[in-house]
Amino acid sequence: MAKVEFTNQALSDIDDIALYISVDSFHYASLQVEKFFKRVEILEQFPTLGREVPEFGIKSVRELIEGNYRIVYKIINKNLIHIIAVHHSRKLLKRAALRRRK
Image (tube, rainbow, N blue to C red; front, side):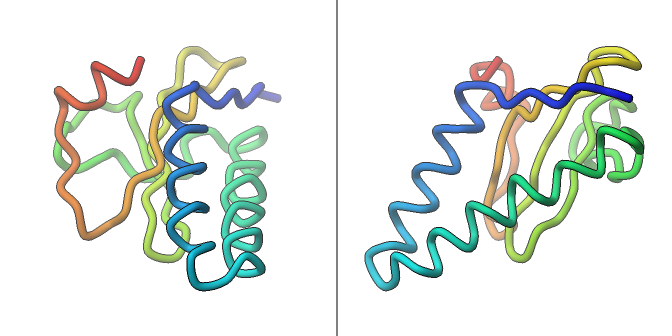
């Protein structure tokens, strides 16, 4: 079973998303945050479940979709996964941005 860890950048992304949603509804902001954390639990058992991030084509950098968001993660090894970004699907994901997030 793999351990899933959120990077500081991913947690910051989630905070920013929650803050944005909470302007209209604190309740829905809380629900969205819960969905992010619940969604990645499956990676503990199935780390390669998500698709490769198409912009990169690197097997170890993958993503899960949660609503309008892409949860980008990196398989470090068979025992460790890093959630490196939570990104709105309408925005382009740039490799340079992910390098800064490590």
